[in-house]
Image 1 (cartoon, rainbow, N blue to C red):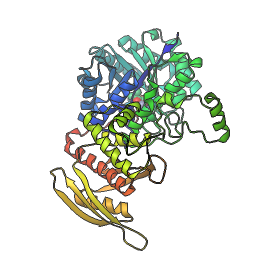
Image 2 (image 1 turned 180 degrees about the vertical axis):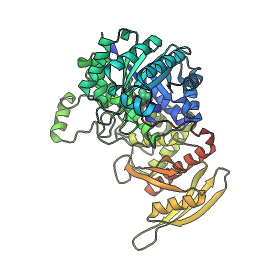
Image 3 (image 1 turned 45 degrees about the vertical axis):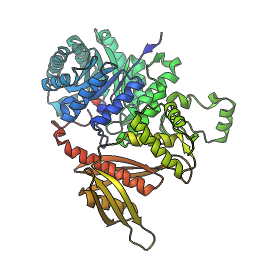
Image 4 (image 1 turned 120 degrees about the vertical axis):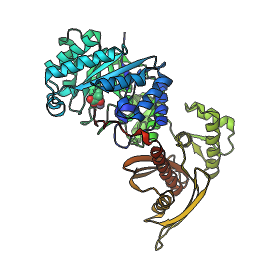
Length: 519
Ligand code: KIV
Ligand code: ZN
């Protein structure tokens, strides 16, 4: 019988730690909902001691989804971390505490300044403390891939004895290569006497582009849990991409003899959601969820596909919920057809959101002859991304052209309904709009990234603008859509500005500790 591989998603913890990817609690709840729909076995929802914001998100996710999947919180080997993690998790029916401590000689010597016996003692005491709260305990010897194998065996054995039910082997710095990593798992299974009492897990970073390959090699070596993130999000080069691990196991079940419980048709929507919220765009040729992942350009391939899909296709787009550019609806399509289409695309909207998306669709269909599936998904995502609006656009006017000074006049409504108007010049019309918005809101920003993409084909395509700006020393991301890219830019910029205002209001969410990047 095929073995089940536990899928442990850490998008909301390791993924969220990557610069520019921070999410607020509402956004984390939306991602958690998508992960539950996807069928992940464990959601690592955050690092509760890191900040009040992290704590609140873990607690809310535990309360809302803790009866449908295991909710996990991270803790260093410190009593206060473990107590705080449990406080956040205690309302979940199925909770896991994840305790970690570095074991490699580099970390022992330079970071922790602890010797081997001190490491073992701390690990044992803190696993025991966590096991006093709940029975589902994961222990990670951080930087395991660079730890001496005999010492790794000793720590793992003692952690299991102390109550760890999952032993996670992190390749914290992405140093491992597949054959080496497989051997680490084989060695542990051969040399740790109580190893059968715990599930072995792999946690790989992608610094050498090998995170997925190493995770699969770990499975060959005996791992039965893989830790991964949507779109491979994560610190530096990221973590192993969930969608790639899952589809490799499914497509090559003949080789691995393993399966997951993931509903693969939710992979593409989950990828879009995470990219939309974090602003981390998915490269076009990214495996499984890139726009080009199923595009066959070469004539020979197209000919083969028409004869028999399996000639050039090892997976089918519908297996991963790929949304293409099918022509679907026009201006005369009614609410009924629109609702059906939204359902067929796998989205469930409450009535108020449905009405807003429908109004946007009618407005778009007025401007554009043809509306595609991808346009509809962009409209849904745009409405679902709404953040509390300190400022909204009432209107704007720009003037630009060769030999003129680009100028913008912008009118914004404040939350109290008052209208504010100002004008500015800039390097171009978009810059002028951004400058006018800054003058009105009093916010100072630095634009870090600006990208435009056409959502579907054609000259009248819906344009999607993504911006990343630094405000108050933090990065904020915003996305806007319109058939007019200046308007899409203004909307994207204002979304980022509104996030900064929301952040200012929840200033209580200042970090309690500086979370070490890379853990
Ligand atoms: O990369 C790492 O070592 C981690 C641990 C906390 C599991 O993220
Ligand atoms: Zn990690």
